[in-house]
Image 1 (cartoon, rainbow, N blue to C red):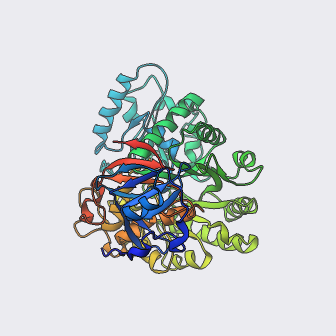
Image 2 (cartoon, one colour):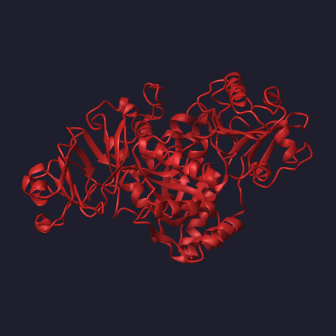
Image 3 (cartoon, one colour):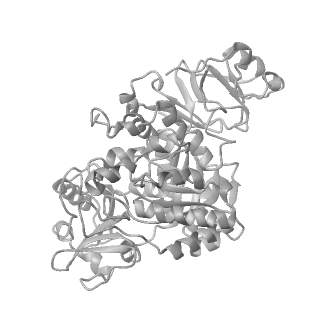
Length: 557
């Protein structure tokens, strides 16, 4: 990649004018860095030194000589030639979900039902008692099972206590018979709107609940205590810092989670900036939105100015809503969660309160429903400036992709979804619909700004996995060799930008983060290799050595 070289007389490249920093104050200078950032124009530029003050704001970036001259009394930190990047941003994650997974059984690495059963049996032995056994991460596609697992396959392991394991995408759950009984689910229990109780050929409930049917189980699951919530948040923040995330957009929070975020911000315990979305427009929204959007809290560490809604389910559990039947299940179109009138009402309610609206839509029918709703509500409420988003935008008709640009909708996409879904996506939607699936290049060519994330804990939170997937269209094993539909891949610059500047922009935060420019926060990471000189196929191997937020080191390997 050809990088922009700056003239020596103006290498403090982030200034509006070269002389604007004559009176700059700095408390800390990092020196001898192999630094890369994007500038205001989106060009990748290099730097050797950066200064920031005791508020964590950058005061100078450029050569060591220039920065030192403008920060004569600063403390110097030697980067020893290591690569320094802006802190990376995950534009779609579930922070408490990640923390919860880190405290429960993780089945995401299992490759067969038998392997999963062995892990569950061991987990039950290691956690005796009568309480619930919880976990997440199973994927029947990776097990090559050809069907969902059943309650009976859990009953053989644990029958005297309830068991509940969520699917990797969070859109289905697997229960044993004890849990089904506690939830009052029988063969005669009707499917709720927007959900499905999986049944066998004789109509018997098998133990898997899809989308809205999960609510039947969630009603009887014990809610985390405040202490457990704190532990989840602490573990999640630790994990995020270790992989170089200095900010995350939390896709759907509750009143209790908002309380914990504010508490952590007050105590200086937030080690990543959290851009939160209120989960839905129900009672939690009514309580949290009384005073309108929270544009900043705790020294710009916490924000609550968006709402998260759902149009449909997920592709792996066939809950994503499709315009035509699934190619591998001609009797199913998936599930729209709401009628057009209901989704219009929810979007309008949030918009009128001044909130950015971010809607989960995976199938082409789900995406079309939300595009139609956005077109109507944005025109009625004049809310173009809210930068409303569709989260995932996974399967979109070729006719609908241009509407993201014309309506002004941000595609918030997760590159590792493509490389995780490649083993089943085309089977689900067929060779024609796949042309509008995970279509990053098509979106970029029309001028859309993609906000990248991972959807953790559905995928791993490591943003270098996402950059690798975006650039190569391969999984970590290097498959497929030529990349999966490689015509949709991003350049390294584009992938870097979608995890930095464009993710920041999608959260109205481009003035404070996303690049290392004067006036922005010193949110940066130190990594163990040069991202822009390595082979793209090894990007996922990148390790984070240090993570800094507002000039404060929050992680060191």
